Length: 337
Ligand code: COA
Image (tube, rainbow, N blue to C red; front, top):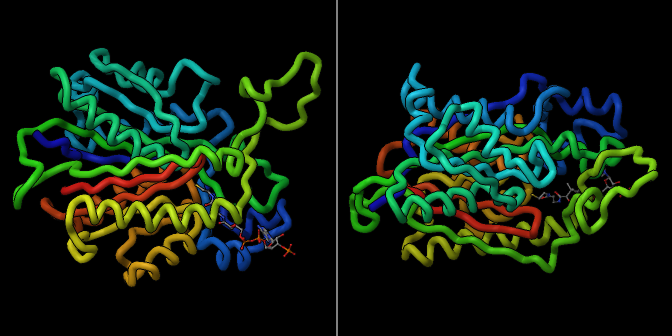
């Protein structure tokens, strides 16, 4: 029994903001952002959009690419919708997954969110795979969606240049394909890790039960991201290489058997450091941070969709995902296409 990806999809909000445009309102410049992060622009959702709007659009794109014109029919075949997000429409509940389930008309699907920040899609894919492995469930829609620009402190140049909004989706199915040997298919390994001791390095401090808004308090800013950039950078480089090595070791393979690595992209330099450590050419990684910045749980599924649509990815190719982020969390998947 294998858990295979049948189709992928993505959604980027219409509005694209370049570094130069950002530099009109924030004390920064294109040269600094590019040289320190590799980011050239980001997409920013419209004020009326919420995360479920992005997630729904990406889901529809995946269903359409699986069976054009039959998204509603395919939605009826879903047993599960899992959305990885750190920026849900509503505090606590309802989940984004339930909102997407309703809009798709996926009346046979259970729906829930996964909170693992930028590692969310890696976790969600593995969660969905595990749940498809028991009972009579067959199909799941796994979505990574985040709308970070609504929780960005636009006065903090150390963070506001880093983020963008997006959603990516994968339609996943339990099949009879083998998971070992030459003909193996689908998700064959996942590494899921957490380092909760670093929880305070990357967080949204206000609004939760630890630090709720109080009656009568004047709130001049919505809850926003706080990040200790240096600490997260150090963690990320270590986490990234650890996950890559563990995935290889578990499967007993070497990196030359992996066709492409689909990394979380928070800073191009983190990927470059990992490439150097493994002696890999940079084109071993599928990169799109220049266009989209860090879109958190959406980064990996959006990149996976873009890569799949290049036509380069052939059935039987081995790909690796690697993620890291708030929690702190990190992890990766090995997938045979
Ligand atoms: N534009 C211009 N200058 C900026 C700037 C900006 N947007 N942001 C910071 N600077 C300045 C700082 O004020 C500082 O100036 P100073 O030396 O005069 O004090 C200088 O640039 C260096 O700042 P520093 O924070 O040390 O830069 P850095 O090289 O560590 O890069 C990050 C900062 C955030 C890009 C980097 O730490 C990083 O990528 N961290 C990990 C982020 C991450 O992965 N987050 C998400 C995890 S999912």
